[in-house]
Image 1: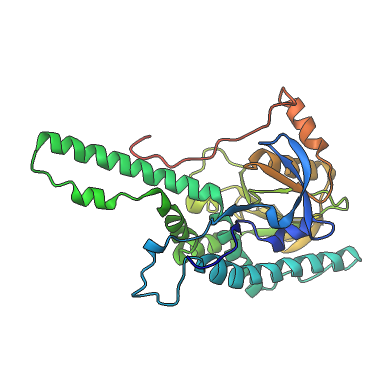
Image 2: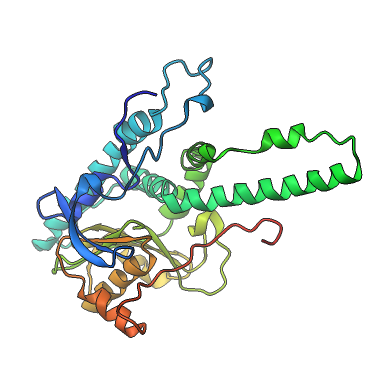
Length: 327
């Protein structure tokens, strides 16, 4: 195996630094540990060998210059995250200009906005919860298929099970399956198209108290019982919530449902205290484990848990799953 960093970040460090006072650590509230503490960014939002592809799945006859860590090093770190960092910096710089009293500031031009939409899609798809969802579905498919083949073998003794067995995937195949999702050009383009046509509003807080989490890009449906087209980005009435920095939240609104917000498109606006509390609560509720802040202030989470009935019980939402044969 080619040498690689053991820790591989599913949320880039360039993003997490926007929630850090010294660009080295963030303050964390952990649901699993039930406490708050400072944590080095290099040890945050990462898993060991998360994107590493096992050697046996690399077809050397077609990909001679590819090693097991090409996704982490060559695709994500060297390409995607460099664009990501530059566009995040441009948004933050534009926000600084806007706070000085400039009513109109170009945040992202059309080309940059299209690129950022694609990067949002990739960021959403490269997360552990997406891998878990699709790998769980893969295991269900395998189980159903194996049960059908077994039943047919019992009924017809000459049934060959070798084809079905060949389709079964071992546990170490999960990073391969995941890479096929977050590097799927057609899927990314379709989500990108859904995002770019929506209304982009950048909300600014003067309190430097915006939370983010280990699941930062959230989809909030304002209309009940919506089919989650394109992972939810194509839902009617959807609001996409994406904290950009300690004082900026990008909110992206369905253009059909929220027609009255079109005048705010691609502009900055003030984030009220009520909105800040709502968005921060949403980050906590949908975090897999960790919530991040520039300050060691998570009193809002304590109040939310008290309101939910027990300060010692963390609020954890069950992730949507893909059903196979109704299960």
